[in-house]
Length: 512
Image (cartoon, rainbow, N blue to C red):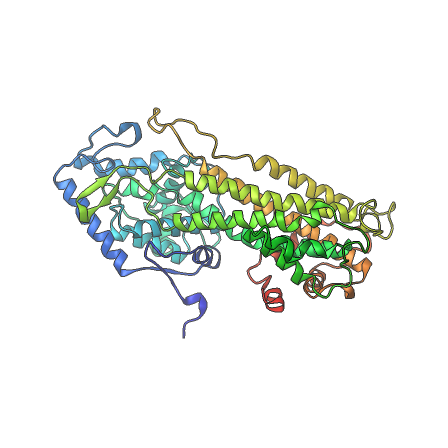
Protein backbone atom coordinates (compact mmCIF):
# COMPACT_ATOMS: atom_id res chain seq x y z
CA UNK A 1 0.00 0.00 0.00
CA UNK A 2 1.33 3.42 -0.96
CA UNK A 3 2.15 5.91 1.78
CA UNK A 4 0.91 9.49 1.54
CA UNK A 5 4.42 10.63 0.53
CA UNK A 6 4.46 8.11 -2.35
CA UNK A 7 1.15 9.22 -3.87
CA UNK A 8 2.01 11.36 -6.88
CA UNK A 9 0.39 14.62 -7.91
CA UNK A 10 -0.98 14.17 -11.43
CA UNK A 11 -0.41 17.09 -13.77
CA UNK A 12 -3.03 17.81 -16.42
CA UNK A 13 -2.85 21.61 -16.66
CA UNK A 14 -6.35 22.12 -15.28
CA UNK A 15 -6.78 20.76 -11.78
CA UNK A 16 -3.74 21.80 -9.72
CA UNK A 17 -4.58 23.26 -6.29
CA UNK A 18 -2.64 25.43 -3.89
CA UNK A 19 -2.38 22.44 -1.59
CA UNK A 20 -0.84 20.37 -4.40
CA UNK A 21 1.77 23.07 -4.93
CA UNK A 22 2.64 23.09 -1.24
CA UNK A 23 2.89 19.28 -1.18
CA UNK A 24 5.31 19.24 -4.08
CA UNK A 25 7.28 22.36 -3.14
CA UNK A 26 7.67 21.81 0.59
CA UNK A 27 7.01 18.13 1.16
CA UNK A 28 8.65 16.86 -2.04
CA UNK A 29 5.63 14.95 -3.30
CA UNK A 30 6.47 13.49 -6.71
CA UNK A 31 4.56 14.30 -9.88
CA UNK A 32 3.42 12.52 -13.01
CA UNK A 33 1.91 13.86 -16.23
CA UNK A 34 -1.55 12.83 -17.32
CA UNK A 35 -1.71 10.78 -20.55
CA UNK A 36 -4.19 13.21 -22.08
CA UNK A 37 -1.75 16.06 -21.55
CA UNK A 38 1.04 14.07 -23.18
CA UNK A 39 -1.17 13.57 -26.24
CA UNK A 40 -2.17 17.25 -26.32
CA UNK A 41 1.48 18.37 -26.22
CA UNK A 42 2.42 15.93 -28.98
CA UNK A 43 -0.46 17.06 -31.17
CA UNK A 44 0.53 20.71 -30.79
CA UNK A 45 4.18 19.95 -31.43
CA UNK A 46 3.30 18.13 -34.64
CA UNK A 47 1.47 21.25 -35.75
CA UNK A 48 4.52 23.40 -34.96
CA UNK A 49 6.68 21.11 -37.10
CA UNK A 50 4.18 21.52 -39.92
CA UNK A 51 4.41 25.32 -39.69
CA UNK A 52 8.18 25.12 -39.77
CA UNK A 53 8.16 22.94 -42.86
CA UNK A 54 5.83 25.42 -44.54
CA UNK A 55 8.10 28.33 -43.50
CA UNK A 56 5.18 30.24 -42.04
CA UNK A 57 6.07 33.54 -40.36
CA UNK A 58 5.06 33.00 -36.73
CA UNK A 59 6.32 34.98 -33.75
CA UNK A 60 8.81 32.96 -31.73
CA UNK A 61 8.97 30.15 -34.28
CA UNK A 62 10.45 31.88 -37.27
CA UNK A 63 11.04 35.38 -35.89
CA UNK A 64 13.12 37.01 -33.22
CA UNK A 65 11.73 38.19 -29.90
CA UNK A 66 10.42 41.46 -28.51
CA UNK A 67 11.61 44.31 -30.70
CA UNK A 68 13.04 41.68 -33.09
CA UNK A 69 9.59 40.22 -33.79
CA UNK A 70 9.80 41.38 -37.42
CA UNK A 71 13.18 39.70 -38.00
CA UNK A 72 12.79 36.39 -39.90
CA UNK A 73 14.80 33.44 -38.58
CA UNK A 74 15.60 30.56 -40.91
CA UNK A 75 15.05 26.92 -39.94
CA UNK A 76 18.83 26.47 -39.87
CA UNK A 77 19.14 29.13 -37.16
CA UNK A 78 16.20 27.93 -35.05
CA UNK A 79 18.28 25.93 -32.57
CA UNK A 80 20.79 28.71 -32.13
CA UNK A 81 17.91 31.15 -31.60
CA UNK A 82 16.50 29.09 -28.71
CA UNK A 83 19.87 28.62 -27.03
CA UNK A 84 20.74 32.30 -27.42
CA UNK A 85 17.34 33.25 -26.03
CA UNK A 86 17.89 31.31 -22.81
CA UNK A 87 21.47 32.47 -22.35
CA UNK A 88 20.80 36.12 -23.12
CA UNK A 89 17.72 36.31 -20.91
CA UNK A 90 19.40 34.75 -17.86
CA UNK A 91 19.97 38.16 -16.31
CA UNK A 92 18.81 37.54 -12.76
CA UNK A 93 20.21 39.53 -9.87
CA UNK A 94 20.50 38.95 -6.15
CA UNK A 95 20.26 35.98 -3.84
CA UNK A 96 18.64 32.76 -5.04
CA UNK A 97 15.03 31.93 -4.33
CA UNK A 98 14.59 29.26 -1.63
CA UNK A 99 14.52 25.73 -3.02
CA UNK A 100 10.85 25.31 -2.13
CA UNK A 101 10.02 28.34 -4.26
CA UNK A 102 11.94 27.04 -7.27
CA UNK A 103 10.26 23.64 -6.92
CA UNK A 104 6.93 25.46 -7.04
CA UNK A 105 8.05 27.42 -10.11
CA UNK A 106 9.09 24.23 -11.87
CA UNK A 107 5.79 22.55 -11.03
CA UNK A 108 3.72 25.48 -12.28
CA UNK A 109 5.69 25.69 -15.53
CA UNK A 110 5.12 21.96 -16.12
CA UNK A 111 1.43 22.41 -15.45
CA UNK A 112 1.10 25.34 -17.86
CA UNK A 113 2.92 23.45 -20.62
CA UNK A 114 0.76 20.37 -19.98
CA UNK A 115 -2.28 22.27 -21.26
CA UNK A 116 -0.89 21.71 -24.74
CA UNK A 117 -0.94 25.25 -26.15
CA UNK A 118 2.79 25.99 -26.06
CA UNK A 119 4.21 23.84 -28.85
CA UNK A 120 6.93 22.22 -26.75
CA UNK A 121 7.96 18.59 -27.16
CA UNK A 122 6.61 16.26 -24.46
CA UNK A 123 10.13 14.97 -23.79
CA UNK A 124 11.24 18.42 -22.62
CA UNK A 125 8.39 18.54 -20.12
CA UNK A 126 9.15 14.98 -18.99
CA UNK A 127 12.74 16.03 -18.29
CA UNK A 128 11.45 18.92 -16.17
CA UNK A 129 9.29 16.43 -14.29
CA UNK A 130 12.28 14.20 -13.61
CA UNK A 131 14.28 17.18 -12.36
CA UNK A 132 11.50 17.84 -9.87
CA UNK A 133 11.16 14.21 -8.83
CA UNK A 134 14.90 13.65 -8.44
CA UNK A 135 15.58 16.89 -6.57
CA UNK A 136 17.52 18.91 -9.14
CA UNK A 137 16.58 22.49 -8.21
CA UNK A 138 17.88 25.29 -10.46
CA UNK A 139 19.53 28.28 -8.83
CA UNK A 140 17.19 31.15 -9.72
CA UNK A 141 18.04 34.73 -8.63
CA UNK A 142 15.15 36.60 -7.02
CA UNK A 143 15.47 39.91 -8.86
CA UNK A 144 15.27 40.89 -12.51
CA UNK A 145 11.67 40.26 -13.61
CA UNK A 146 9.31 42.99 -14.81
CA UNK A 147 6.34 40.63 -14.75
CA UNK A 148 5.69 40.96 -18.52
CA UNK A 149 6.54 39.31 -20.87
CA UNK A 150 6.17 37.09 -17.90
CA UNK A 151 9.10 36.19 -15.68
CA UNK A 152 11.70 36.07 -18.44
CA UNK A 153 14.93 36.43 -16.48
CA UNK A 154 14.26 34.01 -13.60
CA UNK A 155 12.64 31.41 -15.85
CA UNK A 156 15.71 31.56 -18.10
CA UNK A 157 17.88 30.54 -15.15
CA UNK A 158 15.55 27.59 -14.62
CA UNK A 159 15.75 26.63 -18.31
CA UNK A 160 19.57 26.80 -18.36
CA UNK A 161 19.77 23.68 -16.20
CA UNK A 162 17.69 21.73 -18.74
CA UNK A 163 20.47 22.52 -21.20
CA UNK A 164 23.22 21.42 -18.80
CA UNK A 165 24.20 25.01 -18.02
CA UNK A 166 23.61 27.40 -15.13
CA UNK A 167 23.63 26.16 -11.55
CA UNK A 168 21.46 23.86 -9.46
CA UNK A 169 21.09 22.62 -5.91
CA UNK A 170 21.29 18.86 -5.56
CA UNK A 171 21.38 16.94 -2.28
CA UNK A 172 22.39 20.02 -0.35
CA UNK A 173 25.15 21.17 -2.73
CA UNK A 174 25.21 24.09 -5.15
CA UNK A 175 26.66 22.69 -8.37
CA UNK A 176 27.11 23.54 -12.05
CA UNK A 177 23.87 22.63 -13.79
CA UNK A 178 25.40 19.90 -15.94
CA UNK A 179 26.99 18.23 -12.91
CA UNK A 180 23.76 18.31 -10.92
CA UNK A 181 21.92 16.70 -13.83
CA UNK A 182 24.59 14.03 -14.19
CA UNK A 183 24.54 13.17 -10.50
CA UNK A 184 20.76 12.75 -10.72
CA UNK A 185 21.15 10.47 -13.75
CA UNK A 186 19.59 12.97 -16.15
CA UNK A 187 20.75 14.01 -19.61
CA UNK A 188 20.41 17.66 -20.69
CA UNK A 189 18.39 18.38 -23.81
CA UNK A 190 18.85 20.63 -26.88
CA UNK A 191 15.92 22.91 -27.57
CA UNK A 192 14.08 23.02 -30.88
CA UNK A 193 12.11 25.89 -32.43
CA UNK A 194 9.66 27.67 -30.08
CA UNK A 195 10.79 25.70 -27.02
CA UNK A 196 12.97 28.35 -25.44
CA UNK A 197 10.13 30.83 -25.58
CA UNK A 198 7.71 28.23 -24.23
CA UNK A 199 9.94 27.73 -21.20
CA UNK A 200 10.40 31.35 -20.18
CA UNK A 201 7.33 33.28 -21.32
CA UNK A 202 4.90 33.07 -18.40
CA UNK A 203 3.97 34.16 -14.89
CA UNK A 204 5.13 31.12 -12.95
CA UNK A 205 7.71 32.88 -10.75
CA UNK A 206 5.39 35.53 -9.35
CA UNK A 207 2.64 32.92 -9.07
CA UNK A 208 4.80 30.37 -7.25
CA UNK A 209 5.97 32.96 -4.74
CA UNK A 210 2.36 34.08 -4.40
CA UNK A 211 0.99 30.58 -3.83
CA UNK A 212 3.35 29.87 -0.95
CA UNK A 213 2.77 33.32 0.57
CA UNK A 214 -1.00 32.97 0.25
CA UNK A 215 -0.93 29.50 1.81
CA UNK A 216 0.97 30.89 4.80
CA UNK A 217 -1.34 33.92 4.97
CA UNK A 218 -4.40 31.66 5.31
CA UNK A 219 -2.83 30.14 8.42
CA UNK A 220 -1.72 33.60 9.56
CA UNK A 221 -5.36 34.69 9.65
CA UNK A 222 -6.16 31.85 12.07
CA UNK A 223 -3.20 32.75 14.26
CA UNK A 224 -4.28 36.38 14.37
CA UNK A 225 -7.63 35.34 15.83
CA UNK A 226 -5.86 33.03 18.28
CA UNK A 227 -3.50 35.74 19.50
CA UNK A 228 -6.30 38.30 19.77
CA UNK A 229 -8.38 35.92 21.88
CA UNK A 230 -5.53 35.29 24.32
CA UNK A 231 -4.78 39.00 24.58
CA UNK A 232 -8.45 39.82 25.10
CA UNK A 233 -8.59 37.48 28.08
CA UNK A 234 -5.38 38.84 29.55
CA UNK A 235 -6.88 42.35 29.41
CA UNK A 236 -10.34 41.40 30.73
CA UNK A 237 -11.85 41.98 27.30
CA UNK A 238 -15.55 42.71 26.82
CA UNK A 239 -17.07 39.63 25.21
CA UNK A 240 -20.15 41.43 23.82
CA UNK A 241 -18.12 42.84 20.91
CA UNK A 242 -17.79 39.33 19.49
CA UNK A 243 -21.49 38.44 19.73
CA UNK A 244 -22.87 37.33 16.37
CA UNK A 245 -25.80 39.73 16.67
CA UNK A 246 -23.45 42.53 15.68
CA UNK A 247 -21.67 40.64 12.93
CA UNK A 248 -24.81 39.14 11.38
CA UNK A 249 -26.04 42.60 10.39
CA UNK A 250 -22.75 43.40 8.66
CA UNK A 251 -22.25 39.95 7.15
CA UNK A 252 -18.82 40.08 5.60
CA UNK A 253 -17.76 36.45 5.51
CA UNK A 254 -14.31 36.94 7.01
CA UNK A 255 -15.62 39.18 9.79
CA UNK A 256 -18.18 36.61 10.91
CA UNK A 257 -15.55 33.85 10.75
CA UNK A 258 -13.11 35.76 12.94
CA UNK A 259 -15.77 36.72 15.48
CA UNK A 260 -16.96 33.12 15.67
CA UNK A 261 -13.42 31.86 16.19
CA UNK A 262 -12.75 34.31 19.02
CA UNK A 263 -16.04 33.33 20.69
CA UNK A 264 -15.09 29.66 20.51
CA UNK A 265 -11.54 30.24 21.69
CA UNK A 266 -12.69 32.18 24.75
CA UNK A 267 -15.67 29.96 25.62
CA UNK A 268 -15.59 29.10 29.31
CA UNK A 269 -13.21 31.94 30.17
CA UNK A 270 -13.34 33.44 33.66
CA UNK A 271 -11.33 36.43 32.47
CA UNK A 272 -13.58 37.83 29.75
CA UNK A 273 -16.06 40.38 31.07
CA UNK A 274 -19.57 41.55 30.31
CA UNK A 275 -20.35 44.98 28.91
CA UNK A 276 -20.29 47.44 31.83
CA UNK A 277 -18.74 44.98 34.28
CA UNK A 278 -15.31 46.68 34.20
CA UNK A 279 -15.88 49.08 31.31
CA UNK A 280 -18.44 49.64 28.57
CA UNK A 281 -16.17 48.96 25.61
CA UNK A 282 -12.60 48.08 24.70
CA UNK A 283 -10.04 49.84 22.54
CA UNK A 284 -10.31 49.23 18.82
CA UNK A 285 -7.44 46.73 18.68
CA UNK A 286 -9.56 44.36 20.81
CA UNK A 287 -13.12 45.38 19.97
CA UNK A 288 -12.58 45.64 16.21
CA UNK A 289 -10.40 42.55 15.81
CA UNK A 290 -13.11 40.64 13.86
CA UNK A 291 -13.63 43.55 11.47
CA UNK A 292 -9.91 44.00 10.80
CA UNK A 293 -8.98 40.32 10.74
CA UNK A 294 -12.05 39.55 8.68
CA UNK A 295 -11.13 42.06 6.00
CA UNK A 296 -7.72 40.41 5.72
CA UNK A 297 -9.37 36.98 5.58
CA UNK A 298 -11.50 38.14 2.68
CA UNK A 299 -8.43 39.57 0.96
CA UNK A 300 -6.65 36.22 1.25
CA UNK A 301 -9.71 34.43 -0.15
CA UNK A 302 -9.71 36.76 -3.16
CA UNK A 303 -6.01 36.14 -3.74
CA UNK A 304 -6.47 32.38 -3.49
CA UNK A 305 -9.17 32.50 -6.16
CA UNK A 306 -6.92 34.42 -8.56
CA UNK A 307 -3.97 32.10 -7.92
CA UNK A 308 -6.00 28.96 -8.57
CA UNK A 309 -7.05 30.39 -11.93
CA UNK A 310 -3.49 31.37 -12.78
CA UNK A 311 -1.82 28.08 -11.87
CA UNK A 312 -4.14 26.30 -14.30
CA UNK A 313 -3.71 28.69 -17.22
CA UNK A 314 -1.63 28.93 -20.39
CA UNK A 315 0.46 32.08 -19.95
CA UNK A 316 3.02 32.12 -22.76
CA UNK A 317 3.04 33.63 -26.24
CA UNK A 318 2.24 32.81 -28.95
CA UNK A 319 -0.40 30.22 -28.07
CA UNK A 320 -0.98 27.41 -30.52
CA UNK A 321 -4.47 26.11 -31.30
CA UNK A 322 -3.59 23.12 -33.43
CA UNK A 323 -7.16 21.85 -33.77
CA UNK A 324 -8.20 25.22 -35.20
CA UNK A 325 -5.11 25.65 -37.38
CA UNK A 326 -4.34 28.94 -35.61
CA UNK A 327 -1.46 30.60 -33.79
CA UNK A 328 -2.42 33.66 -31.75
CA UNK A 329 -0.01 36.27 -30.45
CA UNK A 330 -1.61 37.73 -27.35
CA UNK A 331 -0.78 38.83 -23.85
CA UNK A 332 -1.51 36.00 -21.42
CA UNK A 333 2.02 36.41 -20.07
CA UNK A 334 1.11 39.79 -18.55
CA UNK A 335 1.23 39.52 -14.78
CA UNK A 336 -1.32 42.20 -13.88
CA UNK A 337 -3.94 39.80 -12.41
CA UNK A 338 -1.31 38.42 -10.04
CA UNK A 339 0.37 41.77 -9.45
CA UNK A 340 -2.83 43.32 -8.12
CA UNK A 341 -3.57 40.21 -6.06
CA UNK A 342 -0.10 40.26 -4.51
CA UNK A 343 -0.44 43.90 -3.53
CA UNK A 344 -3.79 43.04 -1.95
CA UNK A 345 -2.22 40.13 -0.07
CA UNK A 346 0.61 42.36 1.15
CA UNK A 347 -1.81 44.94 2.55
CA UNK A 348 -4.00 42.29 4.17
CA UNK A 349 -1.08 40.59 5.92
CA UNK A 350 0.42 43.92 6.97
CA UNK A 351 -2.83 44.87 8.69
CA UNK A 352 -2.85 41.65 10.72
CA UNK A 353 0.58 42.64 12.02
CA UNK A 354 -0.43 46.28 12.56
CA UNK A 355 -3.31 45.49 14.88
CA UNK A 356 -1.36 42.74 16.65
CA UNK A 357 1.39 45.18 17.55
CA UNK A 358 -1.19 47.55 19.05
CA UNK A 359 -2.60 44.72 21.17
CA UNK A 360 0.78 43.63 22.45
CA UNK A 361 1.56 47.27 23.30
CA UNK A 362 -1.50 47.24 25.54
CA UNK A 363 -0.21 44.09 27.23
CA UNK A 364 3.15 45.61 28.18
CA UNK A 365 2.14 49.23 28.83
CA UNK A 366 1.42 49.76 32.55
CA UNK A 367 -1.04 52.55 31.71
CA UNK A 368 -3.14 50.22 29.55
CA UNK A 369 -2.68 46.65 30.78
CA UNK A 370 -5.20 46.41 33.64
CA UNK A 371 -2.70 46.17 36.52
CA UNK A 372 -0.38 43.64 34.92
CA UNK A 373 3.27 44.24 35.85
CA UNK A 374 4.94 46.88 33.66
CA UNK A 375 6.41 45.17 30.58
CA UNK A 376 5.31 41.84 32.06
CA UNK A 377 8.27 41.46 34.40
CA UNK A 378 8.24 40.95 38.16
CA UNK A 379 11.40 43.03 38.67
CA UNK A 380 10.76 46.16 36.63
CA UNK A 381 13.65 48.60 36.66
CA UNK A 382 16.32 46.00 37.26
CA UNK A 383 14.81 44.01 34.42
CA UNK A 384 13.14 45.18 31.19
CA UNK A 385 10.97 42.16 30.48
CA UNK A 386 9.10 42.51 27.17
CA UNK A 387 9.87 46.21 26.70
CA UNK A 388 12.12 45.73 23.67
CA UNK A 389 9.99 42.90 22.31
CA UNK A 390 7.43 45.59 21.55
CA UNK A 391 10.18 47.66 19.90
CA UNK A 392 11.04 44.73 17.66
CA UNK A 393 7.40 44.24 16.68
CA UNK A 394 7.00 47.96 16.01
CA UNK A 395 10.11 47.95 13.80
CA UNK A 396 8.83 45.05 11.72
CA UNK A 397 5.38 46.62 11.42
CA UNK A 398 6.97 49.85 10.21
CA UNK A 399 9.03 47.91 7.67
CA UNK A 400 5.84 46.25 6.46
CA UNK A 401 4.27 49.63 5.80
CA UNK A 402 7.08 50.46 3.39
CA UNK A 403 6.90 47.04 1.76
CA UNK A 404 3.12 47.30 1.33
CA UNK A 405 3.41 50.19 -1.13
CA UNK A 406 1.85 48.71 -4.29
CA UNK A 407 4.26 47.38 -6.90
CA UNK A 408 1.54 47.07 -9.54
CA UNK A 409 1.12 50.83 -9.99
CA UNK A 410 4.62 51.08 -11.43
CA UNK A 411 5.66 50.36 -15.01
CA UNK A 412 8.85 50.87 -17.00
CA UNK A 413 8.87 50.39 -20.80
CA UNK A 414 11.26 47.75 -22.14
CA UNK A 415 12.40 46.10 -25.38
CA UNK A 416 12.65 49.31 -27.36
CA UNK A 417 9.21 50.41 -26.09
CA UNK A 418 7.52 47.37 -27.68
CA UNK A 419 6.76 46.14 -24.19
CA UNK A 420 5.54 49.46 -22.88
CA UNK A 421 3.47 48.39 -19.88
CA UNK A 422 4.64 45.80 -17.36
CA UNK A 423 3.14 44.50 -14.12
CA UNK A 424 5.99 44.34 -11.60
CA UNK A 425 4.08 41.35 -10.27
CA UNK A 426 7.15 39.44 -9.17
CA UNK A 427 8.30 42.37 -7.06
CA UNK A 428 4.82 42.48 -5.54
CA UNK A 429 4.90 38.76 -4.79
CA UNK A 430 8.31 38.95 -3.14
CA UNK A 431 7.20 41.87 -0.98
CA UNK A 432 4.00 40.07 0.02
CA UNK A 433 6.03 37.02 1.02
CA UNK A 434 8.28 39.15 3.23
CA UNK A 435 5.33 40.86 4.86
CA UNK A 436 3.70 37.51 5.66
CA UNK A 437 6.95 36.28 7.22
CA UNK A 438 7.26 39.49 9.24
CA UNK A 439 3.66 39.21 10.42
CA UNK A 440 4.31 35.73 11.79
CA UNK A 441 7.00 37.16 14.03
CA UNK A 442 4.77 39.96 15.28
CA UNK A 443 2.03 37.47 16.15
CA UNK A 444 4.61 35.22 17.81
CA UNK A 445 5.57 38.13 20.07
CA UNK A 446 1.91 38.80 20.86
CA UNK A 447 1.39 35.13 21.78
CA UNK A 448 4.43 35.18 24.05
CA UNK A 449 3.21 38.36 25.75
CA UNK A 450 -0.27 36.85 26.06
CA UNK A 451 1.11 33.71 27.67
CA UNK A 452 3.26 35.78 30.05
CA UNK A 453 0.21 37.84 31.00
CA UNK A 454 -1.84 34.67 31.53
CA UNK A 455 0.76 33.46 34.01
CA UNK A 456 0.19 36.62 36.06
CA UNK A 457 -3.61 36.32 35.82
CA UNK A 458 -3.89 32.52 36.41
CA UNK A 459 -3.91 30.21 33.37
CA UNK A 460 -6.66 28.11 34.93
CA UNK A 461 -9.09 30.96 34.24
CA UNK A 462 -8.55 30.87 30.47
CA UNK A 463 -11.12 29.59 28.00
CA UNK A 464 -10.89 26.18 26.43
CA UNK A 465 -9.18 27.32 23.24
CA UNK A 466 -6.99 29.97 24.81
CA UNK A 467 -5.98 27.46 27.46
CA UNK A 468 -4.73 25.20 24.69
CA UNK A 469 -2.81 28.14 23.20
CA UNK A 470 -1.22 28.96 26.54
CA UNK A 471 -0.16 25.34 27.16
CA UNK A 472 1.20 25.00 23.64
CA UNK A 473 3.34 28.12 24.00
CA UNK A 474 4.61 26.98 27.38
CA UNK A 475 5.57 23.58 25.98
CA UNK A 476 8.00 25.43 23.73
CA UNK A 477 9.03 28.54 25.66
CA UNK A 478 9.18 28.85 29.47
CA UNK A 479 7.90 31.75 31.56
CA UNK A 480 10.28 34.71 31.49
CA UNK A 481 11.16 34.91 35.18
CA UNK A 482 14.28 36.98 34.53
CA UNK A 483 15.68 38.85 31.55
CA UNK A 484 17.05 36.72 28.75
CA UNK A 485 17.62 37.10 25.02
CA UNK A 486 14.15 36.71 23.50
CA UNK A 487 14.86 36.51 19.77
CA UNK A 488 15.27 32.74 19.95
CA UNK A 489 11.86 32.48 21.65
CA UNK A 490 10.30 34.53 18.84
CA UNK A 491 11.80 32.19 16.27
CA UNK A 492 10.64 29.02 18.04
CA UNK A 493 7.04 30.24 18.23
CA UNK A 494 7.00 31.61 14.67
CA UNK A 495 8.32 28.32 13.28
CA UNK A 496 5.77 26.35 15.29
CA UNK A 497 2.97 28.58 13.97
CA UNK A 498 4.08 27.96 10.39
CA UNK A 499 4.33 24.17 10.83
CA UNK A 500 1.78 22.15 8.85
CA UNK A 501 0.20 20.44 11.86
CA UNK A 502 0.45 23.28 14.38
CA UNK A 503 -3.30 23.93 14.55
CA UNK A 504 -4.60 20.38 14.13
CA UNK A 505 -5.17 19.77 17.84
CA UNK A 506 -6.91 23.12 18.29
CA UNK A 507 -9.15 22.53 15.27
CA UNK A 508 -10.06 19.11 16.69
CA UNK A 509 -10.67 20.50 20.18
CA UNK A 510 -13.00 23.29 19.06
CA UNK A 511 -14.38 21.67 15.89
CA UNK A 512 -13.41 24.57 13.62
